[in-house]
Image (cartoon, rainbow, N blue to C red; front, top):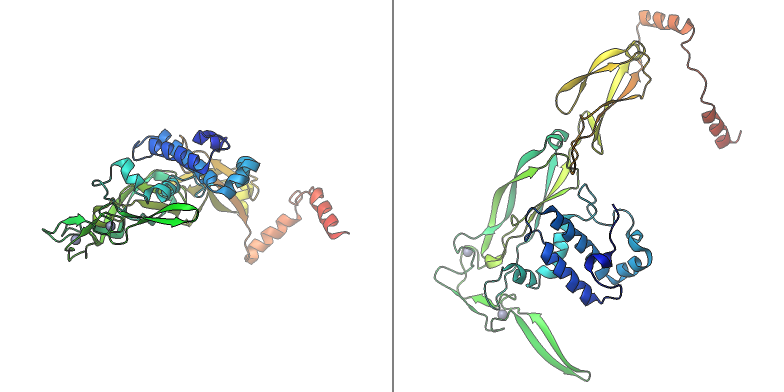
Length: 383
Ligand SMILES: [Zn+2]
Ligand SMILES: [Zn+2]
């Protein structure tokens, strides 16, 4: 997949200022944000693409490298979380957006999260949880319950943080603005310095009598059980974001997200290779020479495999369509059965006699055709 030019993605010129880049990204991010386009895959892709472009161009050093080398500047795996979902993960994109636009109240403005004029609500933290899955679960898709400790809204005060009956009042320090403007004069002129109000933490309101249960936080320690639907075909490192399931925000602020990170458990029999499953099957000398019908394990029960007479060690048999389903497309990988011929270490006297007899018969010695190997070896050793 060829990547679009980052400037083209943001719709700005190559000489765009940092501010123009930020504004252009903000406009696109708001337009395509998953909260505004639930379930719209195309919007999600556009959101990720815009965020990736913004992340590269907002940083002067990265931008210089990009101007010079293009996408090659960031090489492979430029985006974090390289998994089946593409280079730049949705959760990374959401975090990047929240980092630059969530902390200033802009986000709440854009999505209607504000309580009223001058009052800002802080969002709860995102929580990351690991979800280890077996290959069987990955192949079939699975619904999992995850128990999670988190900050939940205080029931006593309904999340407001105020004791019952006691209301909130406008913060006397900032007059409800949530920020403090200080004008200072210098020889260069007048400066306006804006800082968040320390008394109300930028919320514009204070609580006269805090709720005793939550000490005015509006949230308490609790736990919850989440149900996560995992589609078939995920890989270790894939993320599943669950919006609004994270920590409750302080004093009624919106909840953060839960980011479920998929982990792949080691399997006793199988090794995953992309969407293929590799299974190693030891054969006896006689099975390899004479052929056999064997039973092999699959992710769903067993199947039979015909080993033809004269099978060499390390031969791989493909059982089509018995691997892992593809995550983003139809079909599934294969089950690859790699056979190895097992040589017995200890044999009985009778078996020894049989092998000795075999050793004397014609046509059982391997042909010496591997000339190139010996040539290479000689060159390496210089003899
Ligand atoms: Zn409370
Ligand atoms: Zn204040």
